[in-house]
Image (cartoon, rainbow, N blue to C red; front, side, top):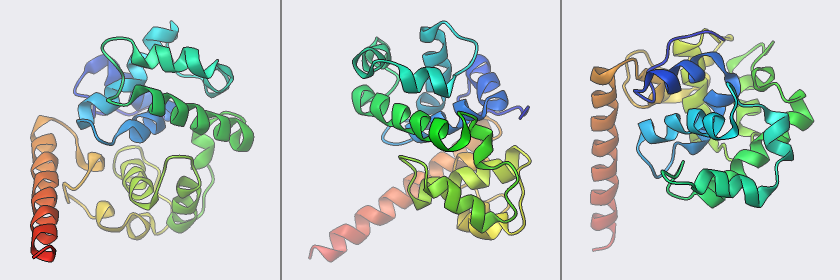
Length: 198
């Protein structure tokens, strides 16, 4: 994996995301209840605090949970909920060690279809269907992982130039479009909830 990503809008963080499958997965895991750039900057921050050039699933899985949570909680915190996210990252790494010998790219290596890849992603701790579809779209659109039927498996996130998720962010302009889409979706959900409550 050697791509130029612009998800964190930070050169060092984006460089790591583009070459490290585990960093990309961890960034996706962190992408909830915080701004996208904050989430995708997380893997670089974690690697720096571990004194490493990259993230290692074996090492993270074996760390003392309290010490790892403390590492993520240092200011500035890696996430709004650093303790619970530290636990989720360790669960993800433990799963990767057990099922893919710690190699995150094993999740998508050799998959024949988009449906199979979606199933593998959904099996990852912390990855529901939506998160799995967004990551599948990111793999297909920006990382060259395009098994047969990947766009269909990714659902609306797989559509070309849909600007619905991080899969479509290639720079500041597309980031603004994705952010606008997310705000529209939030407003629509809020309106629907208000209408339902009457």
